[in-house]
Length: 226
Image 1: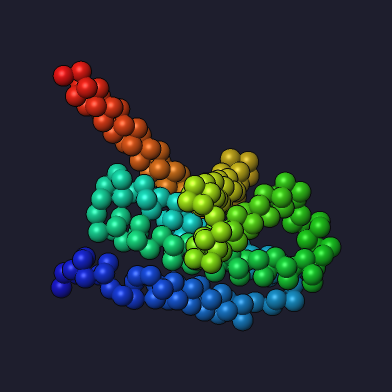
Image 2: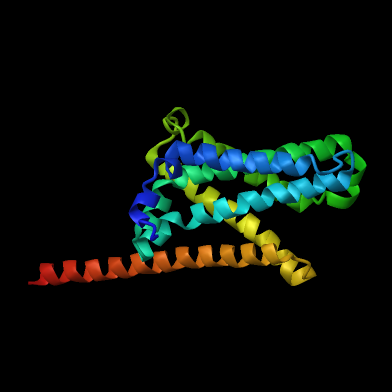
């Protein structure tokens, strides 16, 4: 039996807060089920959980990154659903990153020597901390009590710079691993190309907007010269 796309994308369980609660519940349940299968007294197991939670977070980030742009390039039921739920998909990303933050703190506190010798890198730490600060600011200003403290321009600039920063940091990790170490697993290659495609969608949308501006300007000039 064929699925009615309009009914699917308008399903209340796939929109707004229900989408967030279901998405974050799946992330949390999967994380907990994975945790009980590991010996979390070892640093390696905690490091694995850091990577595991990132793999949950990245797809949500890339979907949010291209949400508005896909609507510009090819309006459809999916692109409208994506744009409509951008905030809630972003919150799903934040919930996965909260788990990652927990495991990072766990590793630092329980296995400080392992973290210092095997994980710590100054540039990665600074960039990662910047990502968390942007994410926290974007989450807080996604709600009225936070958004009301910013002007419209400030809010747009924060979220635009923030989403580019988070995309660049996440995708850059896969790029670096691929071109310098070549040690990515299949799922990491999928995320690498997914992230690249998301950037491509934004560039195409930007190009289309620029073309519209040129056309509109030409029409305006033509009218004024008549």
